[in-house]
Picture 1 (cartoon, rainbow, N blue to C red):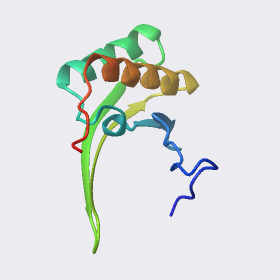
Picture 2 (tube, rainbow, N blue to C red; picture 1 turned 90 degrees about the horizontal axis):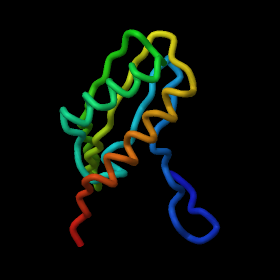
Picture 3 (cartoon, one colour; picture 1 turned 180 degrees about the vertical axis):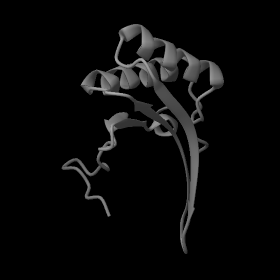
Picture 4 (tube, rainbow, N blue to C red; picture 1 turned 90 degrees about the vertical axis):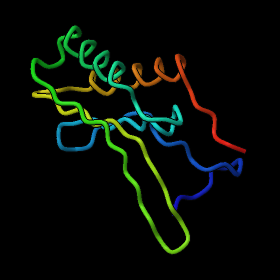
Length: 110
């Protein structure tokens, strides 16, 4: 279980982070409240290729659902796998997700 920060709020999760296996995970749904569209995924691929961070890459949009005795969760993530990727990939993925959130965001129900 995560500890609360000094002001009583839960700690913030990173928008994008390296997964330790050469890929990047983007917490897209936490930021936008929705899944990534095909056009947004295409835009991410194009931006990564234009930045020259990888010649070959694979992008997966994942909807993960978990169930337990007292909880049900749904998480929309985007996974990026690149050949020979570097720290720039995380930064580019973070910038892409923030741009997508500015374009269109779904607010949670009260």
